[in-house]
Length: 134
Image 1: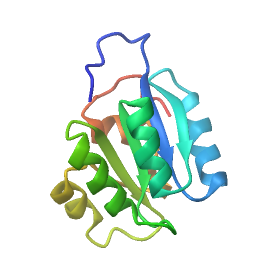
Image 2: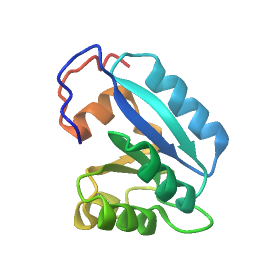
Image 3: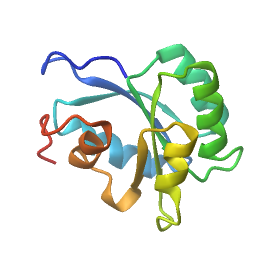
Image 4: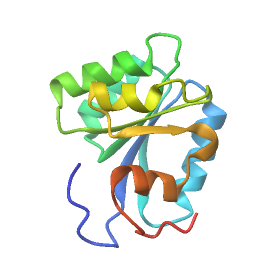
């Protein structure tokens, strides 16, 4: 992840989820603060791989379960070509070992969808209390 040196310079986020409604809710949540800026959205793993290369976001929020390929597969592919890319996995499914799996494949961590917020994302990325009011 690139250094977040200025409070006025939000981290760029790529949202990856096959559910458009969920992407919209996350975008709205992240837009409520000034820590993150959603710069792109993808509905498939293939789109995630392409947009991550094109946009070079600071962080990719990746759904674990998608139709074309899993978020695990897409994350592995992204990190094989961009090893410094920050990826945070998320899922509606209960934990079931996703936190450990996320770390094993090189992602920054796992946040269950029902707990995804500015504060939880800051915590997972090691940003501390950076405008994490939501």
